Image 1 (spheres, rainbow, N blue to C red):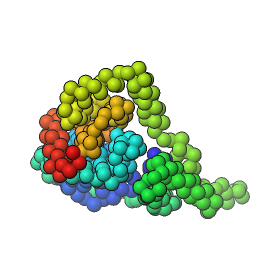
Image 2: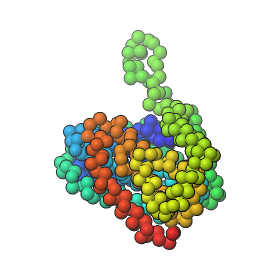
Image 3: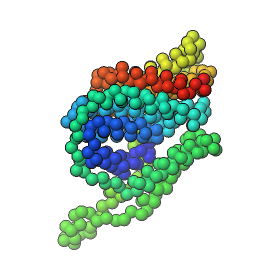
Image 4: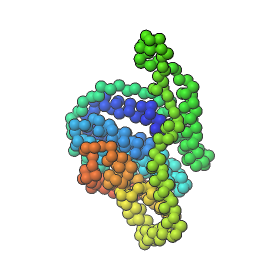
Length: 366
């Protein structure tokens, strides 16, 4: 989260949005570009951040086309949830499974094709309802602040350290992430010590009256603690509260009773599909943590199925995932809860198709 705040503050995300606007793609091209970018970025970046970024692009280019804004946002929500499902670095429910050492990092790549199918099935259907016109180009220029490219590089290094340390040194993912935070802190110190003083844009006036010219270093300043302070603390506190509640339910035996009903009286496949559907209105991270505390005895294929259904099931309703809720608040016109509901059957078709693909290509895990 700190890296994401740093990249946003340095103008990286805004630069990506301006670049897309300047290329003069038509609406159908933008529909696919924002969808695929959301799918790819969500494998390593928070789903909420990717959803808001791509939503800002869709809103900016489609300000005169509410039809495009609505359908592009639905596509973005589906793409973000699908992309984050097969990567522990992007999806919270997938991260929980990885941290509990139930599956190895490489095991999740078996879900890449099912997740891609989950995204492509509704996207192909929605494609025919996207306007064919081309929006007006933006006249803004990309203005990245000092150190932006190096912060992007350190972010990539952090991801590699996290995976390498877990796979080869068997260190928890948090160790690699903290090492990456240390790199960012060292770089913050470097930026602070190498700031070049810049005179204020009104220096000529100060010189005319013989007054000392003030220094304007606002565009070079980088405060690591400000970026840490701007983390999504409300989200972290939400998960803390959810884990405390689930821990209490587990302690008094309710989770064991639920596990006996779900996995004792039903086939694990049916139970996992039902749990995945429930993630349309209950946070998937909370549900996954609850299942982990039930300690069901499942083969790897069923754990992968649970990860898949919980990850992509949140796309069925706009309130089922952080990207959907974020876009509902960000987009004032065009994307609503009711509009997302219109595409629920199409999204459900992708949900079912991804499950069939998982059973087809990952039969060896069952």
